[in-house]
Length: 257
Length: 80
Image (cartoon, rainbow over all chains, first blue to last red; front, side, top):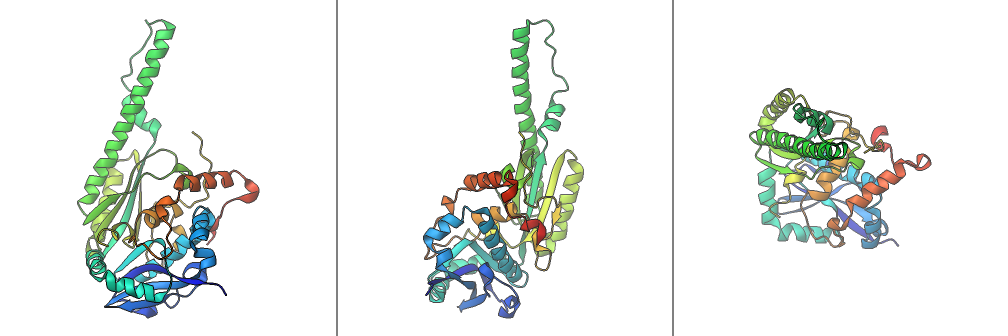
C-alpha cells in the first residue's frame, strides 16, 4: 500500500470550509481542512511515492511537475484568500498526517494569529519594471566625444572605454528609475518587498529588470495603488511597467512564524 | 544576447489573479517568485529544503527543452 502524507497549502481564519468544495489540490486531490483554536489549515492527501523526500528533490527540478504543483497550490490558496484571511505556506510543505498539522496549529498559534492579523483585509500586488538597455544608453550618449585626432588603436580603446562607461551609466540610470518607482508605490502600501530580478530564460523577457516588487496593500486602498501604477506608467514612458494582482499575500506571510 | 522564446505566459500587462479570474494568465515565473521565496516557512515532516532547489538548473532545463522542438516544455500555461 502506498504511504501518504498531508500537503499543507496555507492557514486561514474565519473560513467557511464549503468555499473549497469545488477546488482541486495537487494531483487532483480534494481539499480538506484541519482546525484548531480558531485556525484552519488547508490540506490534501498526497502519495509519498511522489512527495517523499527523494522523489520531491528530483521533481522540484522538473519544470512541468513544478508548474503543475505550483498552479494547484495557487488554486487552493487563491480560493481561500478570496473569502478569508489566508497565510500561504511555502511550496511543498508536507506532514506525516493530519494530526501533525493540528499539532502545528497548536504550537504556532500565536505566530499564525499575528500573521493573519497583519495580512487580513490586505492583498499583495506585484509591479515589475523593465528598461531596454539600448534606449537607456542612447539617453546617456547624446554628448559622446569624437576620437578623430587619436591614432586608430588609441581611438578604439577610448571608444571601448567610453562604451563601457556609457553602459555602466545607462545601468545606473535604469536602476535609479526602478528605485524611484518602488519609492512611489511604497507610499500606498503597508509593506513592501523586492524579489530578485527574474531569470530572462524563465520570464522570456529581454532587457533589464530594474524592479520586481511586491506590495501589501489595504483592500480599501487598492484603487489608489492601481491609480498610482497608471500615473507611474505615464511618468516613465521609457520604462515598461507590469502590474499583477491582487495576489494572496505570499510575499508577506513569512515574517512572524 | 539572444534568448529563446519562452513558453511561459508573460504577455499580459495587467494580470488578474483573484479567485474566479482566469488562472492561466498568471505567469509561472511570478508564481515561483512567491511560492519558492514567499509563504510561511515551516519545517514539515518531509524535510526538503526549497533553498536547495536550484532555480538556475530549472531555468537551464527550461532553456534546453525549449530548443528541442520535439520535446517542448509544458505549454499548459497558454492552453489551460
